[in-house]
Length: 329
Image (tube, rainbow, N blue to C red; front, side, top):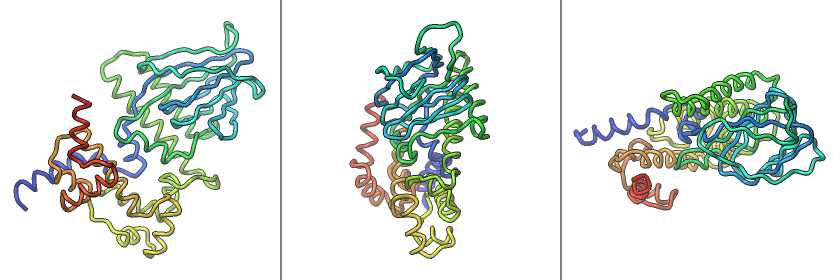
């Protein structure tokens, strides 16, 4: 191996090590969630609000009282004290004190990460409903990945251990939002990551509930989950359907059928999609030779990587990198 290739391989290994994680952790790391705004929502008497579509994901935990929430075309959900809900970006939602209240149209305000306050209904000294929550967004270029894995809103009731763990995380998030201490932004990002992983982990563990095909569905399956974990831990390896099937202890045919049913796409289609997501992240953040990026995501040559990248992304890697450098300049 010549010195040039050795340097490329060392660079790509350094870049990729943050993604050598289990599938759920690597997915959240690749989306790089960042807190936008934290807020306290309170309500008194009878009230109702309707929010239109948002490009930010939202979360909330009921601190006191109860409310009813309906997201897009999903069934209404009653939230009581201690309940947590995670909303993917997408359709708007309605939040009501009582199911028969006519909601008032509202606009989502996403100001920089600080603690805001919103009150619904008549002003009183002691509101009968309080919710701590907020919104967060995902860093380009893989922001759309959450909507591809979340089946819709995730509701965790107060009796569940995950809800109590998330409550602690949200409490820390609130404290950081109020402070202006050094390192605040990074800590808030990590807390949002923890909250998101806890919610997605809970969703993937719900047996018997209908879940649309996707990564969460596949991770709950012992065989396919094992293969996905091995792939995500070593994306640069020259994986084939056969080698993935061996990891899952299944025949090629059985593995392909099971993987496609659970994930929603054939094995190699998923591998290409994930590799291109990692490549976009690298090109978005680093100035590296194309063959170094290719090696980091499992391609033996820059030309093969360039062909796959153009087919998936719609641009050659060099064009994509130059466009992103222009945006961040």
